[in-house]
Amino acid sequence: MIVRSLDDVLGTEHEVKQDGWTSRRLLLRKHGMGFSLHDTLVHAGACLEMRYANHLEAVYCVEGRGSITHVDSGENYAIVPGTVYALDAHDRHILRAETQMRMVCVFNPPVSGAEVHDATGAYPLVNEVQG
Image 1 (cartoon, helix red, strand yellow):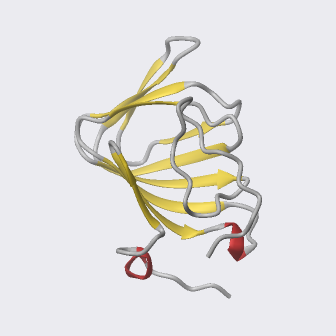
Image 2 (tube, rainbow, N blue to C red; image 1 turned 90 degrees about the vertical axis):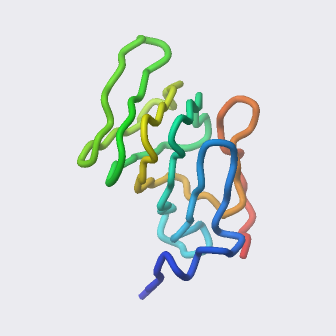
Image 3 (cartoon, helix red, strand yellow; image 1 turned 90 degrees about the horizontal axis):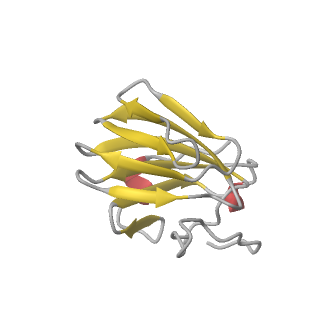
């Protein structure tokens, strides 16, 4: 059994920050669950263009409001508490935060913990287990 709290992650190397977001990584590759679980803050005013070429992601909004645009189709969707979106085809997307948004994110394959977005908006695929 794995039991962790957000307090276990805050202020550690598993609280990863990049322009526009802070990812608090609760479950990682090393935990052996087959996915990683993140409590992510998307900062108010952030406009993030991303495409997870190496991962599938599901996101559940628990706080704040914003929107997501599917780059290829141009479709735009409101994101408010209770909304889930799944990037099931490595979709290029733009996430915009009108207010700070708190998101619960699940990645498959799991991240190892230190990943940040590269120039394409993706996380690199990291095979080694990190602490």
